[in-house]
Amino acid sequence: MTTRSLTSPLKIAGPLKIAGLATATAIALGAAAHAQEIKIGAIVPMTGDLQAYGETTLNGIRLAEKEINAAGGDISVVVGDTQTAPQAGVDAAQKLVSVEKVSGLVGALSSGVTIPIAQSVSAVVGVPQISGASTSPVITNLEDNDFLFRTVPSDAGQGVALAQVTQERGIESVAIMYVNNDYGKGLADSFQAAFEALGGTVTQSVGFEKNQASYRGELQNAADGDAERLVLIAYPESGQTILRQSLEGGLFDKFIFTDGLKAPELVSALGAEYMNGTFGTTAKALETEGTKHFHEAWVAEYGAESDKPYHDTAYDAVHLLALAAVKAGATDPVAVRDALRDVANPPGEKVGPGQYAKALELLNAGTDIDYEGAAGSQNFDSNGDVAGTFELWEIKDGKFVSERVFEPKAM
Image 1 (cartoon, rainbow, N blue to C red):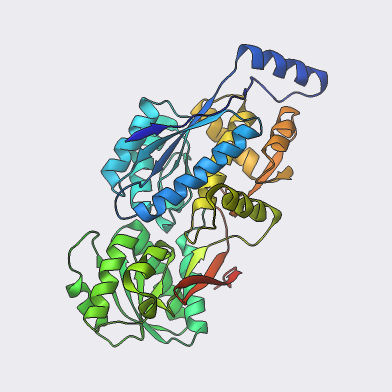
Image 2: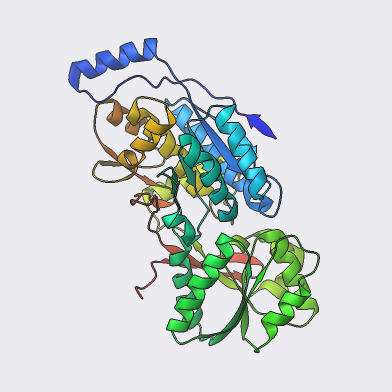
């Protein structure tokens, strides 16, 4: 299903890379003659295994849309449901590109959906795609014609971060169960390599398919070897089934999670007494003025902070596409892609969340900008990747409690 948002107007004018009086004249004439709206496609899972994250991600996108338009922007967001499934995601993205004529795509969440969209739609048609949640290391070297970017660090980093905090807690042996897609396999391999390099033992590494009624066979295989804990790399729906069957069968009662399971619904469904003591990692920025603005704006808009990740990374993706269109002086998707690194990377005057009007003024004056976002610095490298820091959290008294935000040690 596709829904359209309503926005308030602002004009993106024609060429903007001239200075002084000529700039003001060109902008005025361009606004009068070439007023344009940038349309952004949101490809998010409103149904399926990642539905628990879809609404939060869309809220981040909507918050960016609201702030940008209030500050003089002119963007509209059109939503496509990926259903957390590759073909449904490709179909949704194709409709957004061919029917809605979007200038850029934000999403998908799952790497197993993002990669097919990149290969079948964005890289083929030539539309920039920015995922705020797809963390598979496979994406780094994907043949995407430089149309796939992400505002979240790769799991090559998260695997190391999780291995280090696991070793720090004195845990010597673990079993791994991972969703059998690019996200799950990539993170499992990254974690295992780092954990073993630190002297830990992985007794078993077992893949599983999503949406099964029973995972007892996979759990029995994972339990072979008497590991101290189960590292579960999954999404909330399948993860809940695995956890329940593990507890019922007396196979594992101590767990380590990754970003895909930082969902309060799991605690509510299974009970705090079983989830307390579980810890995990998620990409998260160190605190800055930009992150503080985002959190305050989020609470003002939605009433409370979210325990779920990737609403801030989606928010940043919208800002970057909107700013790239201004920098390019056009909403043509290729022009927007070509300007993304210009607005995301240094050199340039730093701007961040809550400063869209300032960024607009600087770009219209021909001044370079460097967007530092709600999720941290968004400096795209040659592969469209960003560096990042990670949060260690633990479930205490039924709530996700942040322990610290850190950068993994080099290995």
